[in-house]
Image (tube, rainbow, N blue to C red; front, top):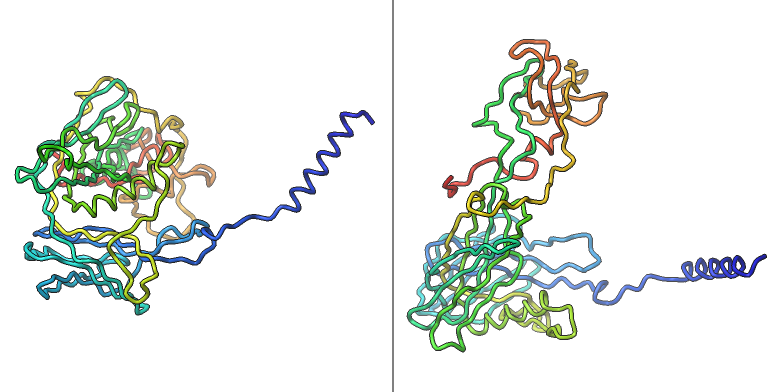
Length: 402
């Protein structure tokens, strides 16, 4: 046996033995049965509704990604002995219409969970956000930057946080012109049964902070909110973003700054080291039990802008329908063998349109007779290329201006 082959066989055998002897290492951070309370949201001091989300942490190794806390009793309490209950509207979500508390007082949160544990926050002052001066965008070579300007003429805020929600139009690769009621081609009602144009939504996933504490005036200029790449589908038609602004106490700002350092600014030897995130909510039943969250109370303000594709450079978005193709003369109507409703006008994916029990298709352009049987041939494509409601809603938002 040649020396090279012999060495190869020995190495292969050692590799197999080494693999067989390996055991998975599960560090305590992954296997520990911790389920700490997480409190998310802001108590709104005004006419807007308050929504708080209660959940519990899950282990990294767990297949469960959401662990809502339901059946809790939640109250906002004032140091003037006032109390405002929050009602559970769906699992883990507790809400109340406009609380309108007396802003001259401090407030705290009290939570009693169904397992008889009690949690209490520190009393916090009400911090109302000053108005937003402007939300605007600047066009760059590779995309668009969105910024916010604000200031407090009273000079009393100094600490700010923002989040946002984006909405933009998406359009299917093909526009379906027809439907079927089971044995007849009918024109599609593009007003009430449109599946070509939809509105997609997304929310901010990063911590956005700003402070004027070291400035002579309480002014924030050109605070970065988000960047949208020129290759994004968000600019294929119309785009809108609403930015919401919160005023913070210095303690709340430090909490969010710590969240930012621990979650987003770790990756090189020059980044901040992870540290314990300490909020202002505590477990009364077990003081040693950590609680994730920070209670803030105050009013918020928001501002919306629109960006139209026609005012941007001739950018070409990354194609998301690159595989889409027309299926001409692919489908012949065959009366279904299964029992079920024959009226399928309002069904986007018609089970009568199939080829050899293959994928379902949606009619695009009729080739056969319209308005009378037999259905005949029709031009079709797969639902993802025709039906935008697979991704989002085709209902135009109330705030949409175009």
